[in-house]
Image 1 (cartoon, rainbow, N blue to C red):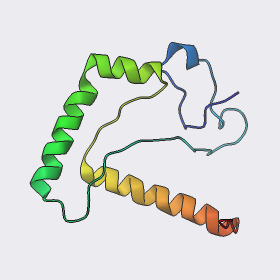
Image 2: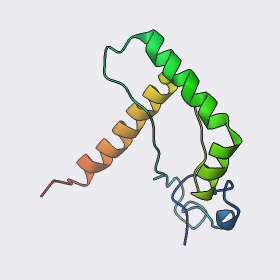
Image 3: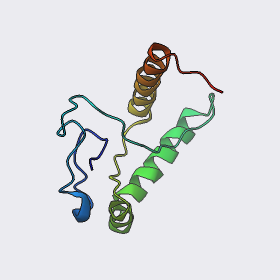
Image 4: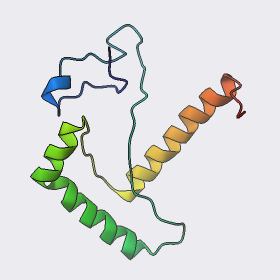
Amino acid sequence: MAVSSTERVTAAPQLAAVPTVSESGYPGFDAATWTGLVAPAGTPTALIERLNSEVRKVLARDDVKDKLAQEGSSPLGGTPEAFGRFIRSEHDKWGSLIREANIKLD
């Protein structure tokens, strides 16, 4: 048993002892799941900034952090720009893998 993220799940005590796939002999493995909030292209910057501010406030609440920890998740929050960079890097990583493995939809 292993977690697929690059770090152990420390937010949930019952999972803290579970090693990562990298620690289990597959260095560089990173296939963590994530959830984020996106908006349509052209959404006014002021609205994006307001949504981001409110979401970060919610993610900072102890009850929300506790609930996410129970599910094995760790809230990150951040800037819209950083999230955009992250989405692009995930697209590049998984798109590359799909092309290299010649994965096709049935």
